[in-house]
Amino acid sequence: MLKKSFLFIALVISLFASGCQQASGPPQASANARRYDLTGTVVSVDREHKQVIVSHDPIPGFMDAMTMPFTLYADWAFDVLAPGDRIHATLVVDGDRSWLENPLVVRQENAPTQTPSRTSSQPGAEVPPFTLTNQDGKRVNLADLRGQAVVLTFIYTRCPLPDYCPLMTSNFAAINQRLQADAELARRVKLLSITVDPEHDTPPVMRAYAMERAGLKDFQRWEFLTGSPDEVRRVATFFGLDYFPEKDQIIHNLRTALISPEGKVVKIYHGNEWKPEEVIADLRAMFEQSQSKG
Ligand SMILES: [Cu+2]
Image (cartoon, rainbow, N blue to C red; front, side, top):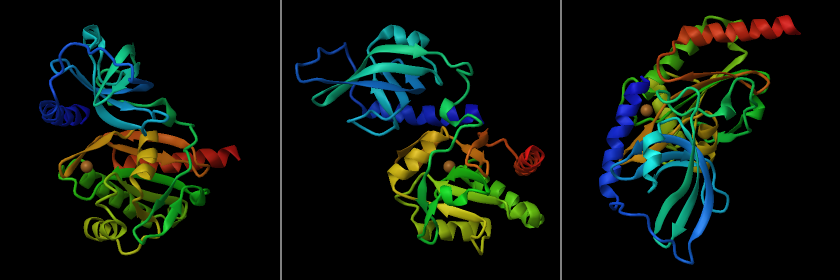
């Protein structure tokens, strides 16, 4: 599945690149050029167009964290850069041009075949507080769910790839069904599906999707969340979800997370190969462990 997701992303990048101006030699920065420190994870590299797509951290005073292409003139960098690497560089913004200078590449242990993973969402990490809006237009706080385990995933309702969002939703429906059969476990678990297409996926759209695709009638245990693009971006970034819009679609990878009743990451399920039974087993194991501890 990881391979597949990269093929998909690579396809889009070639579209991207052809629409961009051709990069020639390194430009001379003018006296008005501004410089910012940039750190991020490399999503893909395109030597021919001297471009690198980076899922970058927030750039204070300039822009939020996002995934986007940057021009990079340092030829040597293309010999070493691979998806999954961490990159540190200076982002030069000069009039209507921008590029990266002085790149420093840090190879990640699990590179290059994995999608970018960030250390922030490792097991044991505290999930940063977030507030999103549910299918009824009500605000939902992660903090309000303390005391319950949370299983969350990211989707968008128009996703055309059967083994992406539709699969996540049917997996969650299967988890929900299993929970229905186990009242003891069910009352301790909350399911959240968060859209990465918040501008299209309003609360009514999310509600209709849930009813149609998951056969959901009440949203007691499983909620469908949307929010402002920034709110969604923050949550998604923490869990290592990369996404960007392309025409009517959102190019994205997949992340599903199990969060403890104390609000800590228990496990991140990458890609689409995980099974509903696995999540149920992990939930049971987590509760058994916490019981034996206290
Ligand atoms: Cu999708």
